[in-house]
Structures are given as C-alpha cells and as structure tokens.
Amino acid sequence: MPAGRFDGSVSLESESLQFLPPPFFNLTQLVDSFKAKNMNEDDLVVLSGAHTIGVSHCSSFTDRLPPNPSDMNPGLTRLLQSKCPVSPNFTNDPTVVQDIVTPNRMDNKYYTNLLKRNVLFTSDAALLTSGKTALKVMENAFKPGSWEKKFAKAMVKMAAIELKTAANGEIRRNCRVVNK
Image 1 (cartoon, rainbow, N blue to C red):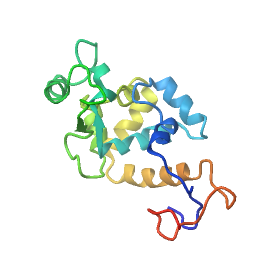
Image 2: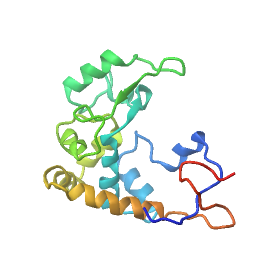
Image 3: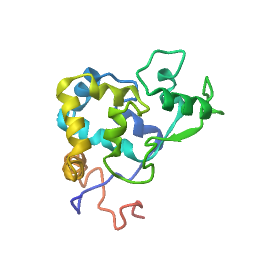
Image 4: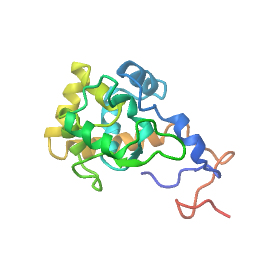
C-alpha cells in the first residue's frame, strides 16, 4: 500500500459493513456496487478472493442451508449444519472459517473451493453465474501467482476510493493506531 495517505481519526465497527456488499447479493448487485466505486468485474472477482481467510457468523449464510435451496456442496452443508444453529441470533451466532482448505493462509484456494461449491455466501456462488466471471474464477484458481499479483493491485485501487485529506484525516505514525 502506498505510504503517506490520510486515515480517519475514528473507526467504528458498526460502520464497516455499510461500505461492503452484503453476503446475499447476486452478481448484478455485486457488479453494480463495485461500479458505484469505480471498480470493475475483475476487481470484484479478485477482491472476493479475500474470503480465503477469516471467519463468518452463521447468520451470514444460513439462507444457503436447508430447508432453503442452494448449490452448496452437500459435504460443506452438513459440516455447517453441525456448527450453526437453525436460527442464529444475537446470543447464538457462532463463527466458522470461510476457507475450509487453508483457513489461515492468504492464497488462491478460495477459487478452487468456489469451483467445488465449497463457499459460504450467495455472493461467492454468484461469481459462477456468468461465463465472464466464471472464467476469471478459473484463471485465479489455476494460474499460479496470478491472483496474488492482481489482488495487490486491486487493494491499492480500492484504497484510493474516497481518499481522506488533511481536513478530515491524519497521517498515522503507526497505521494501526489513531494519533494522540
């Protein structure tokens, strides 16, 4: 990431999701949300690969579990049903890893998981609903090193969205901490 950019002086967890497409979006909604930020389908497919790491609350994908129809791999469905309550709520909403193959490694396994239907979100599965985005998924799955390079470029592009200025931000001495 380029150094010397301005960051906000306040970060609220409650505001973070309003800037991300929700997990239930279909492909049209995803593409539109990316276009609204001057990003394209390549960026969408590449940045979705971030789901190779991290966890998700069960409530983010129970719409893909029975009795609802889904194209999720039956093995993953059974695993998730064993870990998630039928109706997750504020006091009972466990988390599960987003990548069942390499959950703690930033790699392109998300794409091979996606091709095997081993993904949590409707928004992930949506990437296979168009020939154009499905081809990009296959490229990222099977061209070694390709996704990592594209991901770095897409992250820099995303970081340039709605840049802060001196009037509404600060250059942090430590990027993880607001200056005092």
